[in-house]
Structures are given as structure tokens and as C-alpha cells.
Length: 391
Image 1 (spheres, rainbow, N blue to C red):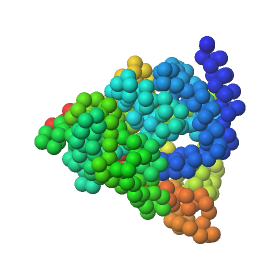
Image 2: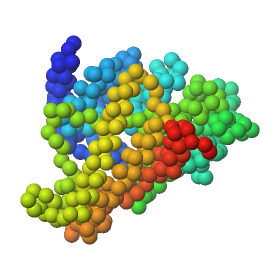
Image 3: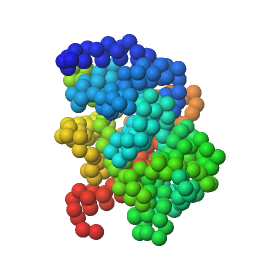
Image 4: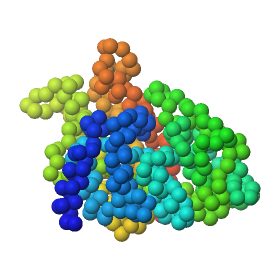
């Protein structure tokens, strides 16, 4: 099939199956569960999963589409052109799926990947612990081998989406006498068991995307150990690199220029004069933020193009995490700043829905330079692993 024929077919399929409610929407992980818990979202998921388009480049043997690099680029462009949300989002496709494709056994892949592709199983991450966040390798959650399973005791914190998850991928300590990086294993466990307790944490933004997760003799199957026993640090690091290497949504070259959200807010606040934002400082800030975001997007796209060989992501993904999270935080702050007093509205009829949403987004994004690896940690990784600087 020619690439032009493929484009025409995928465009028609998206147009036929994507509900209007799944278009023209921004997606943030804090709101993802609500966004994808509607009848329209379920309809969209089932239609795309039937074609394997929830994990478009994964092998067909797991129910995925097995698209080539060029086919996937066309698919992403057509999703963007239709202004459609991805049919499936989460840690299954972005994190544990790619990790299992690299490190998993054939049995693990066959058992877990098809359920990710279909959207049947949702995943969460068990990494951070109280006192073991930035220094993750100091984690203390223990896993003891008993026959054909691990018995797990301990606590994880900041577990995104744990209250909605079916399975967790977790780093646990399996050799307490080894050096802290060497006695860690990477295991998968069912969240629907007696030994797992979940407590959501409410944030200042009003949402509760993170949780405390407690393990009291929880069980993980021995054959759900990913990689070697006591060598889980390598697997855990690679998973984070997959997360940080995620490319931004593609845009069809023939698509109209997207609306600049910063400019729209500034025009509403200050008006226009001769076609320009009628405030010099606001105009300069909008230009600076827009240029920085565009530069990051183009850089990620270029690196993605250069990685067509299938080489796994490396430490340079920390650059994307550092720059991307910083720009996200600065962008949310700029939107609130441009709104003036409307930019701090929490509730009340005097504030518009957009203003209230922007305030909560500003509060929410105060944390993006902390979770998923703090900026300080990313700078250390860049210094050591990318630039080769001495300790």
C-alpha cells in the first residue's frame, strides 16, 4: 500500500470513528481518568484498538498495528489534523509497554501487552517512597522470594493513578545487604489483591492524581520479575528514559497554523493595536515563551527522526524532561500573569471557566519540575551521563 493510500484510509477511519467530544481538547495526566471514562471515550478506544492503533508501532502479534516509521508519522499527523485525542493514554503505552518489549520474556509480553493494546488493563508506577524520591536507589520496600512468588511489604508514595490502576510496575529491594543500586529488582503486581491499600492525596489544585500505596504481604509472581534478580535498577532507568523520550503530537504540514494560546489570553487582556498585542511586555513574554516551546518541539522531532533505527533512548532524554517541565511551569505562570487578577480566581461567578481552569493549571504545574525526576536530578544526569563531567 502506498503512503498516500494509507493516509487516505486512516483519515477516513478517524473521521468515521472519533466522537466530537474527543476532539479539540487538551489532555493533562491529572484529568486523564475523567477524560477517558465516558461512553464516547470508550467508543473511540474500541474502534482504534480493533485496528491496533492504540499502540501503532508495536508488533502485530500483540494486537498492535505494527506500523512502519512513515506510516506512524502519517497516523500521528492525521490525528493532529482531526484535533483528536489519542484513543489511549497512560503508563501502559508510554512506559511499561516499551520496557517489556525490550526486557520482557516472551511469556510476559504475550500475557501483558495485548491487554495494554486493548485498554483492558491500566498501569501505575511504584517508584518513589517517603524519604526515597530524588535518591530513589535508597528505597526500602522489601520483596522476599517464597516459592513461586515474591512477598512485598513497604510503602510507595506519589503513585500516579493508583486508585484507577489494575497493575503496578515497581522497584523493590530484594537484597538488603547489597549496595543500594545492586539489590533492587523490577516486578509487576496485581493491584486488586488484599495486601494492597491505596490512599489518594489531595493537591492544592483540587485534584487527587497521586496516592500513597501500602503493601502488607502483597504478592508478585516470580515470573513477573522483569530482567534479572537484583538488576532492576537498569530496567527502572530505561523505563524513565522511554517516558522522557515521548515525542510531542505531530502536525500535518498542510494543517493550518495552530492558535497561540498565550497570544489569545494577552489579546483578551490588553487588546490589539495595529494587529499586535497592545502591551510591549506582554508581547515580548508571549514571543519568548512561544519560541522556546517551538524550539523544544522541533528538537524532539529531530531526535525522534534520528532514532529511526530503533535504538533505545538514552540519558539525553533528561534534557527533554528538564526543558519541557520548566517550559510547562513557566507557560502556566505566564497565562495567569497575563490575566492579572483574573489569573488567581479559584471559584465564583465573577471568574470565567477558562480563568478558573488556568488558575488550577498554574497551581498544578508548580510541581512539574519535581515529579517524574526533579530538575536538579535531571541536571545531574546531564552533567554526568551526557557531558561526562566529573563528580
